[in-house]
Image 1 (cartoon, rainbow, N blue to C red):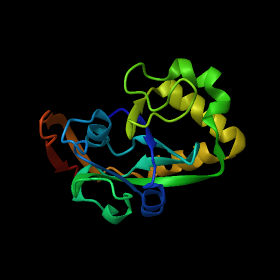
Image 2 (image 1 turned 90 degrees about the vertical axis):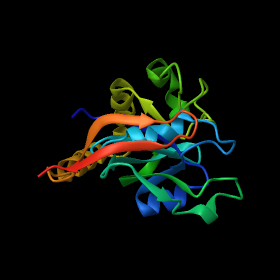
Image 3 (image 1 turned 180 degrees about the vertical axis):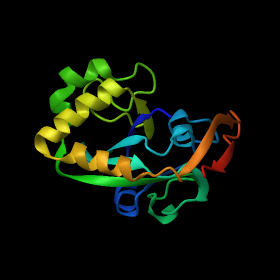
Image 4 (image 1 turned 120 degrees about the vertical axis):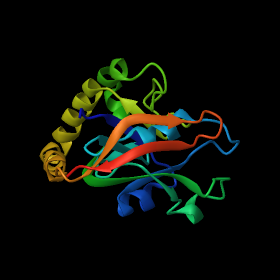
Length: 195
């Protein structure tokens, strides 16, 4: 199965999610509408790579270790009083924290042409897109970003590669068919164990 690359815009959830090795989102926006960046959690797969953005910097690089599950918010009291639903998408991610967080705004000449046209995690200025929680990014973007990260944080790519190697053949495998109800945002998937 091919690897996907993601960018997560943490806000107040950064501390809980980075220390707890996960990402979590509600299934829909607070007004009950479909939110593509929330539905992206259901599209992650073990072995996917996630770039963690918080405090105006890339703070960590992570590897998805388990398939997305339906779970009550692990940090429901830490959402700053926002009107979040209790149930949502939960993805386990093993993070490699950066000793020197990267300011992507200093490198937008390189990164901007590699960003997705739709559902971009960043604005043209390099600031985060406030409407995006988890966004897909291209392999070219990931390669460029990892190069910049490695320049200031020697060995991060090797640590990420080690994490990828640790995901063994007995990990959960997912049938690629995902059904998402566009109104309710519910997800059903076939999960089986590879043995």
